[in-house]
Length: 277
Image 1 (cartoon, rainbow, N blue to C red):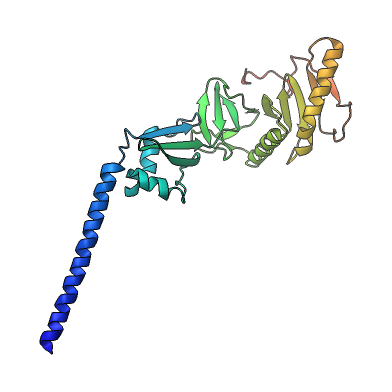
Image 2 (spheres, rainbow, N blue to C red):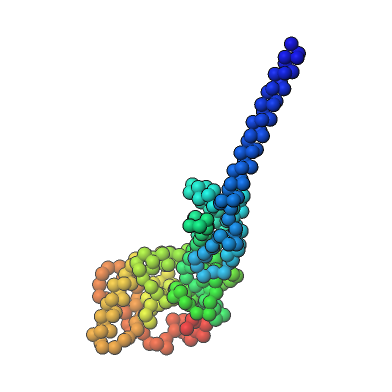
């Protein structure tokens, strides 16, 4: 009986070893096939495109981040794995996509969180995104985004969230930018007064919105107000700039409490040498 049991154990062991050897052979053949037909060279076969204008990440950093798993080196696996899962993103990026192209090539596209406005400080425009993070600085406002002025900052550091003496004002800025986009209004400047009142500058006109937590109604009225002012200028036959009191305008009316603005007047009673030009 002991001999029979030993033979059965030996047979079972041989069978298991044979299965293991077959499995290893299949894996080896598969890897060899993948390596020969679908293996990609990260430097030659992978193209990286960064949508945005920040210099936070280089193409190499994006490439190294995305191709961080063993299966990312085989185009056929990339094709099917990322059909059902998303690429893990990075700070300051909205998303990262990866797709296969002809000729065993891979295209990686990184989308930055788009800037929504900029600050003007020390002669530079500092662009910030919806998280309040400063993502880039430029000598000119090439993106023609709203410039936020009149605030006192406690932190203006690249790739960090800018901070003001009143943290609640950032939510006010977000509300204003959202409402401007919603109503398709393009302005030049969001100016905060010393009393935290808001004035929007557009085409040389100043729309005074007062102090509020949200400016939905006032901003929704700006397109109609701008049209009325353009009609007035057409009637007068010359271009004039106005101060418009939008605090009390809540109904459709020609009475926008607008008066011709003196070009030399300053809302705080003096000239502002730091204002963006």
